[in-house]
Image (cartoon, rainbow over all chains, first blue to last red; front, side, top):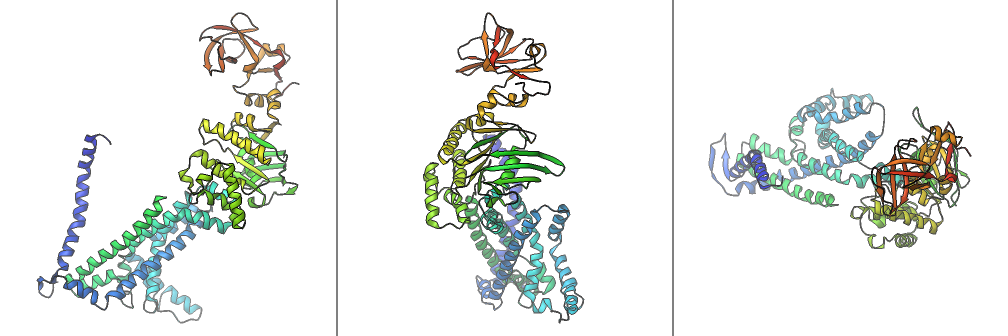
Length: 288
Length: 334
């Protein structure tokens, strides 16, 4: 891959894929930006002229905006904490030699293969339903009043569902990282007088730091865009309206494409701020 | 203090017995080398002493105290691993300080010991680097430093030089020997390299398939190997073994003669043969002699300037006083 001819050939062969991907990204992005400067109400008169930054201003000044940002950050943050902490614990447990290891590992990974819509429906109807749900049966068995999960504890419910979906991913990445830990390092620490907890905090956790940053980075990108879980369960009610869901409501429920597009541009900016921030942390971690 | 006694120690992994009952005493201050071919159980034996593996049966005593069930950290031993096992995210200083920190030692004492170890091992300039920024030899020294600061009753080395290049290995060999003379602490050293064993050891333990074949000072093993295995393993190039009629002349099943104990001549000698490959090292020349009628090939050592060529007929005369005689079972005949 070092002669001029082979480099040119490589560029030529890469070109179709690069152009396709670029188009795939640029066309919707450009359309979103264009719509965001228009007053465009498809069911109420369609295109009604260019309005400059008016959509941007009204999206931010709407009373729903800041609560939705807070909701988004709370969901993302909580899910990250839960999946990383439990992921580390599960990864350490799964790394222990045990009977039926292969099957147990597959079972642990399984939730990741369930579609978000399906898993949210299963949680909503089989576990959290106030009448027939497993949780309400459990509560009644112990003589307690069933919790109305999705209305009374809406945020914890959604965080629970999303964490359940993403825990396997974190576990998988962290498990592979733990398996790459040199056993002689563990033994050296053991000889140096480090107990199990010291070994975890001084050897295992630093070794996992890179994997943890990668888990956080990838999950954040996907968690900022969760939609199906909210759509299926609360429909954005009871304080579960995230930025993504707010944009959806603006575009489809209010039929205001311009306003929704402006929100979309904000979401892009927010995602980029988070990504930039995370890239710097990851970069710092990867440098070592 | 650092006297280690193994009594009837065995180790089995499942159905596979790696170490059959084994007895060994390592005296205080001694430099003991476990040597043997790959898979002979020497590393396992070291790990049993360290406590990283549990013995299947038998007792381990360290300084007269039963330590069979003691965890590694309570045995007062320090180990240097083959891969060095440095903590990659800590600086050299923190690596060396780690065992002291785990012991809850106060900061001033820690700093004093680190400074001392660093000056002994020439690491003072590297204390704030991470292991990834060091060369192989420097990493090795950090690993040794981490062992020294604990002031253990014995050091355990698990093939510590096998990841270094040849020149560094010779240097580190000297450094470890010097360290032993200075600290006078017991050292147990595992290697498959008989040159390391010969040059460093006070006492060599030759192992094969978990059995101790012979224990003794390097030169005792060289002069009087107890059996064919030890005879072939100790000494480089290896001893020539001759069977049949020639051995019968000496009332033995097999006789062994080292390459350096055979005189070479162009005119006359007890045996004759044709020179095959000759290896010129400058100080010495090794000839591989064929068609002697005694063995496939006889290796002989000659002076560096002796200039026989491939295909030359030469005559060999063994020194009668250093012929080793072995019986049918491979044991030495005294």
